[in-house]
Image 1 (cartoon, rainbow, N blue to C red):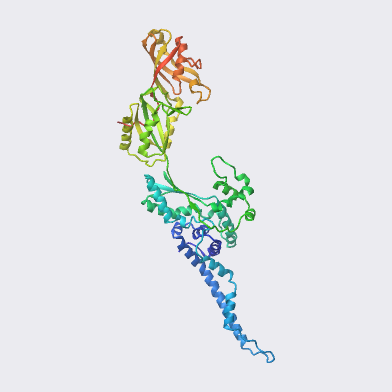
Image 2 (image 1 turned 60 degrees about the vertical axis):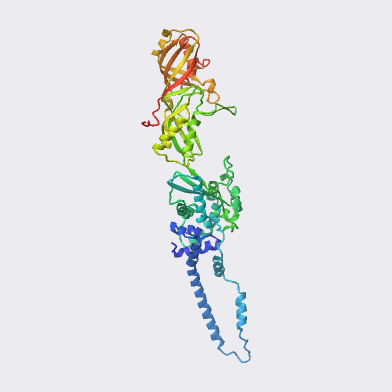
Length: 544
């Protein structure tokens, strides 16, 4: 039994006569009972026809009674004798009556009733989306796509992309029944009409869940199935809005058409009813075909993996090294880590980030450098702690150039902690220094007493191609020297994050001041550099 009332009958009659499908009729009658939409649409159509048929039958019975009374009156008149001087006309024969009835034009009500009992055609509003396109066939198609992609998920959300012209057709149909609603004193606004998207989901969600195997279809989920529709036949429905509401349609780089759903909705809110009706049919013209269903798209929200890495090679860049389109170095830190991670999560891609970066010839020792990976569209999202430990071992066994530790899945929000207050953090280094002038241990001992030395570092020449020109103040918190020979010593430093160590040593043609050349009053250069620690307390340490 459909949740409709007596006052809905004229609206139902008008919508069915206009060519609306059964589910669109329910939408315009503001039926929000989901079960009503889940019935087969042909069954719902029969119920609607029966619902308005009660009124039609009442009218027909009244017509029969009126015809019977009129016939009786005629029969009574026929018994009154005519004057003798006027010969009576011959009574009409039954044959003549039959011929007359066969040539009579059908009444308006009969025409409407005949129209409703015709074979259901493509809906003038939803263009078939709420008819055959949201049935079992569509659910099976979606389920096959999901199974073929081999996603692992606990819940899913169903999204649908509709042609923008549906908004125009819905507006036209709304104007078609608006007067009827007002006359019946029905306090209904256009916003009360159930959206096509909602009705589509109400019908399809349960069918998809059943086909996939009982997975819950919810409003919010990490896994999304997208279904899209197009309808070339009616693409031009929106075009008149470009002239009547030109300011609503702005060309954009990423959009193939200016007639986006948002732009069309904005234009329909702006245009007056009168102007709309001068440009567009009301009710909408009947289409000859249904919408075309586009490929089903599956997308899992990103998974974030974090850890810390050590780099032991002096010929390994952190990220792929490409100069003038040519690849330098055969691998990189991120690639050595990503290969196993992508395989385990069956991810389609990744974004790599870290707490700072070291040069290709710099090692990262100690507890390592924090890093994080954003995994794009992973087909697996939940790895157990044991699986993550096994993944870490796989990475570490794959190369002797790097090692990772504390590998774990983290939230998107936790990612921010890696960059939080990055320049306020400290980092420790050990550098092997060469001096032009011969030195003794006492010549460098004074540097052990220098604390919180502020440097003014102009953007180094070697990174000027990728960093803006600026003078950045940086602090060397402490230094400790270890004498090797007359031209070499080790310099241990604790500095503010972001300090360019190499430039502090050789001065970068005076772009860093003060520098080690000035402090020792001789030319100096850096032969080797190691990162000993990155003092960022993230991600959380995992006990071995």
